[in-house]
Image (cartoon, rainbow, N blue to C red; front, side):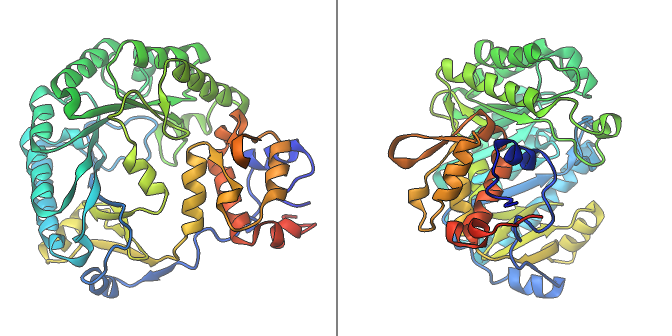
Amino acid sequence: MNFYLPEKRSELISRLTGRVPHGVMGDMSGNDNEIDVKTARELWNNIEMVSERRTIYLHIPFCVKRCKFCGFYKNRTTTHDLSQYTDYLLRELEMVADKPVASGTFNTVYFGGGTPTDLSAGDLERLIRAIHDKIKLADDVEFTVEGRLFGFDDDKVRACLDAGATRFSFGVQTFHTERRQALGRIQSRKKLLERLERIKRIGGDRACTVIDLIYGLPGQSLEEWLDDIRTAHEETLLDGIDLYLLKMLPGAPLTTTFGDVPWSDEELMERQAKAGEYLLAQDWRRLSITHWSRGTLERNRYNHQTKTGGEMLPLGCGAGGSAGGYSFMQMMPLDEYKAQIDAGHKPIGMVRKVQPRPLNSKVTDQMERGFFNPTDFAIRCERLADNWRDAGVWTRVEEGALRLTKIGQFYQPRLNNMLAAYLSKGGDDGPFGAAKEQGK
């Protein structure tokens, strides 16, 4: 049995839904080698970015309340802790601003968490202005502040806009009040819609406003999900929507209760497809499998760059990044992060040397946008292209390109990895293309 080229459609689908046999997809991480902290500090002082797609990622590991689907909760929000943490972030920024890794022009900045909007208006303004002052940013920089609508008052909105933020991303997840309460969310549907309208009225065209919506929630029917999509379109002035499948993350309360997403793949696939059909009919533009834009303000630059080989300068406790062929993870315990800053050190917790993977990035760039064009690659893959077409994951369109079907869109992340592995091993002329017994 060939894992990549099954004889029947049902065989491919079973591999997309089940566990992948160990080693069958190859070592997608390359020969990664962890580096000791002392060497990492020396490396940090001299490393340079090689990509022109550069992001600053600043992490705020605080939340006022833990949501039941969240596996990342670290610290409960307190005003004192957030103000002190902002001071540490500014000190870390000073440390890196004159290093080679921070030279060049950055076209994306992202405040993630956690809940960055829990910061006070003054702290948000301090951080945003400091990045503009210390780092060279592109004239059309996408500067995102992520968070929740609860507590993000007018003063905070204006502070972000006046300091130079250009994009707000809010984790709404669902507009249905009862479903929200079951997830540990705070605001009602009415409050959400009022706040979204107010933020967009204040920001106008100065900032793009997007939200996340989740499908596959326990108790969420297809009708309820489509009502969320309709609400976002008809009752808001949003510039973008990101549609995510619920992930049962280790340690999350929802995972403890349910164990797995309480819907079949067929039911979840239908939710994704119906939402897409509705948005396309309303003239929304699909930026990726999960990201949608209304108008021209939403570009989805940060999300796209992080998946297609862009580099990232990490700031903050628990922040991750990459530069010059290395991946970085900063210390997660807050006390350890602060101790390193106090000692004058970049708070690096782990560094790995990673192999450049331009092929993977090129595959991801296309598959994220819902297509694959074999003619753009020097590696033959017609055998796989025909096999997967017969299995129903894509169809041929103009000039030999392949467009992902409803099935292909739903399984895109897994197909993406399989396709990259197949091409990296020589495609049709490699062992995966020719093997008879691969994957047993």
